[in-house]
Image (cartoon, rainbow, N blue to C red; front, side):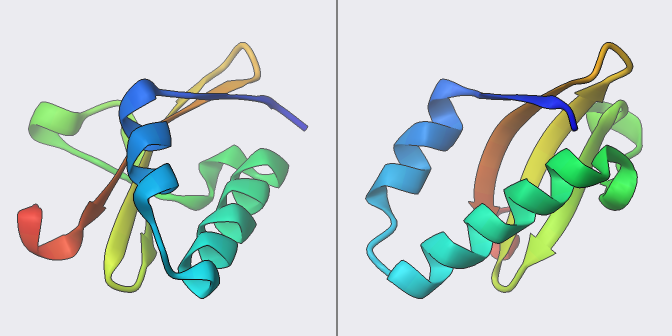
Length: 81
């Protein structure tokens, strides 16, 4: 298990989610990341070093450091990519 830290941007977006089902999906994916931090797709170019998980229609962006710390960075709509 790894330690999870949430970025301000993520907490603001997550608090604005009104759909309880979507909140549940995001929570499950965060739990999945804590169990296996390398589960997400590694990003390239500008976002190199971060990983993403797809939660239809959103993307959950996070940074995994080898010191067993995961930073949940952002939750954004796929169209804003």
